[in-house]
Length: 275
Ligand SMILES: C[S@@+](CC[C@H](N)C(=O)[O-])C[C@H]1O[C@@H](n2cnc3c(N)ncnc32)[C@H](O)[C@@H]1O
Image 1: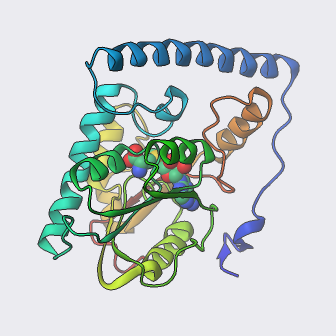
Image 2: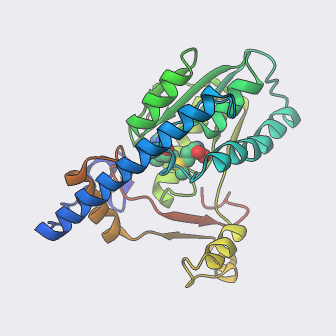
């Protein structure tokens, strides 16, 4: 079996920290407040859809907030802008999305890109998967004609070798450790047809500048990335604490499906020698 941090990939799950009574109460309070906000959001969206102000399906708020979108506008617009380079690459590399070609969205979240794919290219045979069952439940009921399923955090996927003309994945490899990125790159290559197209997004120099601007991770620079080639930042203690909180609060979990921590992975623009 593939080793991760010198342990077999599927067995890496340390015990969760114990929460005291105060921390448990805080986690439950926070989760209840979030549920209130989500009910408000659902009511607002139903109103906007009834009056035709928005004309696209809207994911539940608790799913939206853990997959990069904090507003509806951002969900829709960033879906368009992140899909655009993918369809451009498809055109350049000869994948005709006006034909019934097989396309996979790996780590589809709540269909930020998949919505655009299905709307703009209705002839495509659309497939999507994600490790989080709540995301998958939403995508499945919203796109009943697509093939959607919840995959395990570790390969393999359910698909046969050489299935897809195009596989894309936005904002997943930028959160995998180097070991996980290697595992998944190999698996996505397996399911992509020879001559097919694999389109992945990664964090690189721009993301480092962006993180610095937002006051995030400051102890790493673009110059260091040039020297080191890749850099993975993960706060494991916070990750397992969040898992412990989610175990008592149950609602709005964003680590479900993940058996190892994810963080922020940065790569040199050319990743060939590392992956
Ligand atoms: C930042 S979100 C991006 C979602 C979507 N691609 C987008 O851009 O809106 C990362 C997604 O990857 C999913 N994910 C993380 N690890 C995964 C794995 N091993 N297999 C499949 N999906 C995974 C998460 O559940 C989450 O939905």
